Image (cartoon, rainbow, N blue to C red; front, side, top):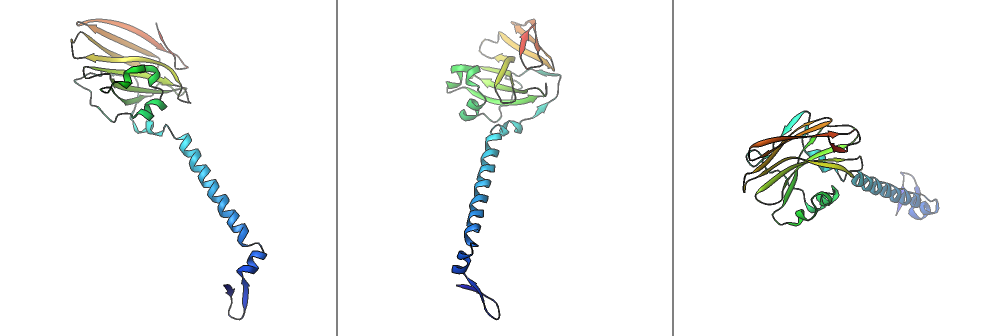
Length: 194
């Protein structure tokens, strides 16, 4: 096969090869494909936590009173997402219980220095827990704190929290007798009891 103009043959593929027109085109195509694969690979790697952005961001202050009466179970985290968010290090063997369920409730906007997520966790059919977890920019856990707890077996213990930019005021109700605990959220995301 050759390329022809109206009056004469321009050049054949054999001649193009000799002139190195086809080989550079193949090299350019291979290079472009490699670059595209690298870009997609890097994008996938840097966006492995992108699913977190699907959850609502909540401004502070807010009250977390998660309990069986007001909580609606949302999308549950799969085992891969749980491991990615390092949740087994917080909940240990509880996540292996076949009745255990965990999902992200919301993202409180506490600081630009670290990322905060609030999870709901059902260790079984009779307990629900709301827990704040602070992560650094690489999603390494800095610290965590229970915000709310409810159990329906005995109905003896219940907790709620007021969450603010630098503090947590946790109120425990043991047989309807409230007691309050105060926690400070440091600039680095650590949480300490006052």
